Amino acid sequence: MRIALCGHYGSGNLGDEAQRQVIREALVSWGHEVTEYGITGPAEGIRLLQGNESAMELEGYDAVVFGGGMVFLTQPSPIWFERHFRELSTPVHYFCVGTETLSADAIDLYKHPLERAASIVWRSTVHESSPDLPGTSDGVDLAYGLPSVEPKDPEPLLVVISGVGCPWLTHLPEVATNLGVGLAFMPLCTHANGSDLMALAEIPARSVEVLLPLSHRSPLLMLSTAKYVLTSRRHGAIFAALAGVMPVIVGEHPRLKVVAEDLGETALPRESSVEDIEVALRMASQHRGRVDLSVVKVRLANALEGLRARLEVTC
View 1: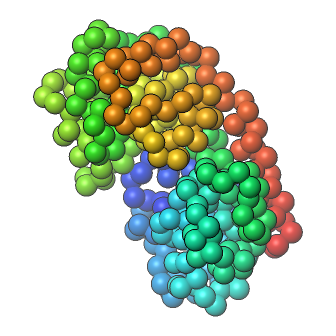
View 2: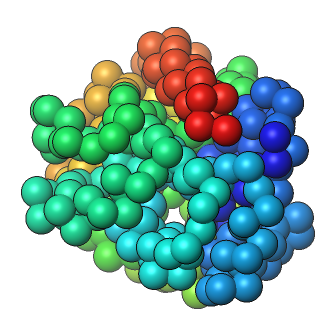
């Protein structure tokens, strides 16, 4: 079967690239021929998805799969898809589109394009009951599908993964000094104007090592040697867990709470004090090498199996 895999691919966001890699490998392992499309621009191995020209291309596929966690709130979204590919007859599948907050109004907004979907795998971060959408089931972040790595002997290093505008960034030199470790910053968005690199400028002057991952696998290898990981990024937390290092998650965003729940932890408030952050980091370090992802990996395997079955039925 020929499948077009579409999403936020090719922009230098390592979380999105991890999701792309996992779902692509699953589709290929099921015997499908996969062509990848990105909304943010062409990149190596990824075609640009835009307008009517792409719609004509997609007609030549047996199915279209949208993978990733932010499909509801950002392009390519069902509404965007509906506008540009209104006449497309190819079956469309949305995977993991529900890892964001969905209100009743949002569900109504997306109802028409979603009713046309061949299948949906999603996860609500707020509502206990699933909305009345076709083919819903329990979704999970695709990045958990990356192979875990064994943690190495820890180096005295606090690795920070954060976006811009986090008040606790100003505390970092004091936190690192009190813990007796060096300070490192890892951006997961590698393009020049990414919010991660802008966040680096918010850390008060001090020697800060910058860790630049070159692929979606690099963060795992780098984080496997860190003693502490502090993050406000969903995929920063997931990458740390896959590296065997329990992260401390800071922030109130629903997607951060979801990852914290996956790891059996509780996210700290954005306004956390130096003392609260230090205590959380010391406690998290006790779980180093003992991060249990077995349950979440089973859930991901079940969700992928659901997608495989729906592809077989609709195509």
